Length: 178
Image (cartoon, rainbow, N blue to C red; front, top):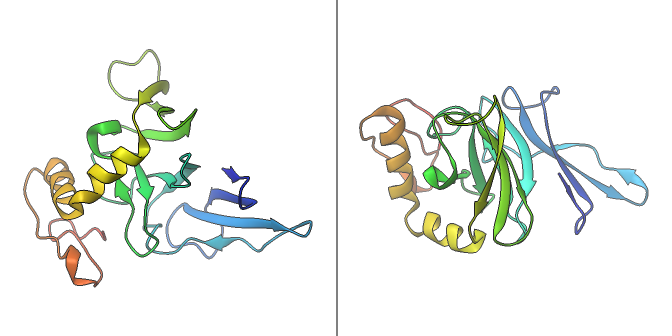
């Protein structure tokens, strides 16, 4: 994804220096040159795959990941704070299959791909109408509660989430970093 406002290219790669299998990187075009690619770090990248970066109209980075706790396969996540793990967009958009490549037409209409049940082919394109700012408010009201629900859906049981302690947060059930 190329952010015209900052002349920054966000991309996914498995190049050396990454933290996982595929990581999100960025490079900025300044004075006719691209900067050295910069890995977005462990608050964005997991040991698995972070792919399909995009951006909402308000500048929120959106990625798909199979490394952060989710509903299964690739899930859509928002990067709302570079000091916190990505926020899962929950069942508002995600399913137990792959959900990826969220692209916004405007503030309230987005398109994404998914291989969810009921589609016409393998990866189908879906439209979703929602206000990104309203979704962010809902998801960030109680991040601990949302993560608990995601883990419960993924594992079928609760897990202790030390999310408010400012330490490395993890799911005590599967050990996933949060």
